[in-house]
Length: 563
Ligand SMILES: [Zn+2]
View (spheres, protein in one colour):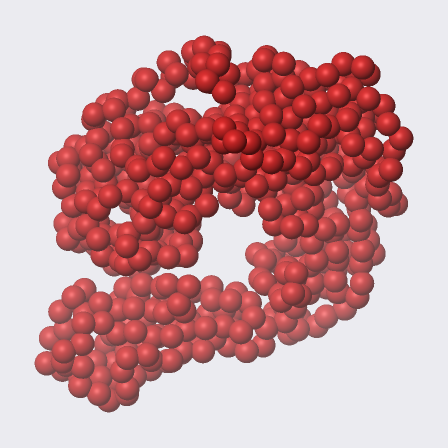
């Protein structure tokens, strides 16, 4: 074990040199509480690698967030999804820190962004302040932790990017302290027969490899019998000491007979390549079981830059009569290592599990554009929509089109066009293209209506149908009643919802003046803060208008009093 580990360190001088370039003392932590991670950098997420770390905030909102170093605010964005309320600070040393899912900004910055919101009459805004316009000191409170945007519980999403390339880098490389003496967990290992003639344990299909923990803490797999070109993949995660969260691991090395075959890590990557995660994981397995197997070999369509070393793309050519030792090292950034050894014997055996290739009428050649007319609906896949050639399953049934299944990933958008000439103008107005999820619930997809066709662009394979939304959105006050005195109220809270196509726009006025309503889609809530506008009128007429994605709209009016 010790020998192997030292051998490994000697093999990775580039990696170690790279890591030492990050300033270790330049920054302070963004929070005053100990850093406990709910997510690591490079963690495998849907269609992307996590580009920062998620820091737990004691399950609550409102904790002060500090600038990690002196700098200038270069970007502030507020959106319903994604990062929610987010702020970017450029530091003089060439790095930009990013703080996401914020509840609100510190007063000065809050004033700045509210002015923009009132000027643009929009909750969702994005601004790029002039360099030096909003300066911050190291440690200055810039915001308060929250749960805005695509966040499923209070936490701080924190990134450190290169200011020039905008590439996110692993924030733990800058000397932030995280308690972690726990080795990564290895859950499952799979062998993949890759060449035409390849067989692993009598299977031409991917097969699970059993392994056991040894006395020294390493893992040993049962001997594998194989022939041809093969590869391996695993399911694993990393836990830190103080939380049960299953986070992503930092690096993986695969050695065959002592030689490095593949070595990748999450030191940095670019946003442009992040969707290639779908070539790193076994996407078919993910579609079936929602579990991500990381492949230790590189597919031809995998353009990820995370590899430090690749030999034969990480694939092992197994010859009859020879034996091989595969060693896999799974590491976290604190240096905790989980080691698995897989002994392999080159042996051609009788095949018991044959390759299953489901042939259909339609074959996709990934490098070429592919057009299909299904009668009443058309599907167009531009070249390189897919990572590989395959038999695609296309079905059309009344107003429903099924495009294969969720076990194939699309890298680029493709278009689905429905012929709606059978419907009247009035019907078409309330119709849209919906995607049906696995429980057949329809969800709105952006629908472009042109003449007698509806078109949507999507990267999700699955079932699409024409749906109709005839019911306008609902608007209901949550914390007040009509004609009530609201003297001690700090905010107005209103529930808005739509049954099918979803909320598109919302706006509100007080005595005819536009007011900022903060929309939180996760709780279907609009909130108006009484601090925003000092009302000198006693009687206030509130008007709230909400429109759904096909244009049905509702208006709510109420009068309240305030002195
Ligand atoms: Zn995050």
